[in-house]
Length: 460
Ligand SMILES: Cc1ncc(COP(=O)(O)O)c(C=O)c1O
Image (cartoon, rainbow, N blue to C red):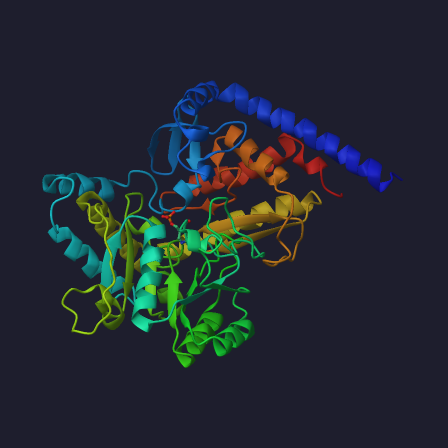
């Protein structure tokens, strides 16, 4: 019998052989991306416009995209289920969106108060339960910044409760507690920036209650109902209802950050899906299905703090943004929201969730049957893979080695399946994925496993 040390060395050697083969194939297949990355690095820091877009040895660069497919600069086709990290719930270049954006061009780029803004806010009001009044912005980060400013002004209190494992955008005050620690998530964040953010274990209502009991200066609790950044641990209707009840009991606002879950769990997001209505919501990503649009919305009373016509004595919140209401983004959102509503009525949300779950099961089975402990989290049309255990939770899933997973995603890219970017582990299926796409993905998962020898790495 081999000692633990020699087994570890043998596994390391096997891993390195697999890595060399996977990376070697990637280098052979993507010389155009390699060259463009070299050039990109001379003009863009790291050759990309956001840290998440980079993966090793260099990222792909795209030439064109349509429906569920994208083509890189070398002419390789991929089934894309990274979906731009979420927004592309209708795939690339959905015809209804393209038509709507083209029709909006007669308005020019930024006319004053385009009428389509009113139409879009009306649709949001019809679809999203808590959205009595809306303000549009560009990104999820801005929407969250604005939501908490409104909440603080409305309540006259500074404190915000944030759960561990939740990401709420790149505003300094929220770059804390992204994992299960209290550490700042980035260099360059002023240590005092998160001073009024109070961290709480995810949906630990006891801890939350004692926090609310001991601190009368809390304006709001903010949460991502998908718990996406921390590993897609989701939430259920019962917990959300209890959270709703608790926040009401303590007179604290509840903000659902539905940048991920909005439009994806249901057209009206988690609040529609679980029947729990928060005081405020933030949305972005799938809202305009690829165009730049975000929103913050809430009750008429709360949103009155940004209403110039509000009665005297109402706190006045500054809310602005030069490109908040671009007609192309608003037109895209109108078309997307109408399409989501129709797909939901036709039962397509359920079908997509079912198909996504099947891919999740395939992934889990393939890893586990090779003796590699694995748990795949599934919520609506999203998946995330966790290696290192079969019954993990947010805390126990922390700190596992992700190298093997990154290699697995890169191997799938070699086979024409961009299931996720290797470094992100974010899988988002879309309504553009056909039955055939799902079959190809399912088959490629198994093929890649045996072709590259991932199945030799487990304990079997
Ligand atoms: C829950 C949540 N809130 C806010 C944001 C920030 O959105 P954006 O990247 O559009 O600024 C994200 C981004 O992933 C998110 O997942």
